[in-house]
Length: 114
Image (cartoon, rainbow, N blue to C red; front, top):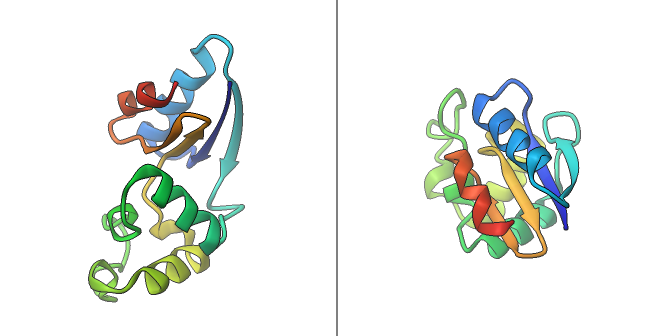
């Protein structure tokens, strides 16, 4: 099985999720440090759609100016464009496998798609 994690190495939850993926038998992990290589708005839209969540639910509020900018109440296109332009607005970690996509907070959520 292949798994892609949109990872922030400075985040404990992201590191724990990556460890779960690396320890899972038969899982080939691709790590994307999304702060260095941000996903496009289109890729984010696909990830959230596949996760069954809205882009607003994927906004990182802590440590960002998302609330001050009105992003939690903005339309999807505005939120996705802001995330693509400023990847620190993306809550992490997002994990994609052939079984689906999950925002892995807490990290144990990743088991749902392994």
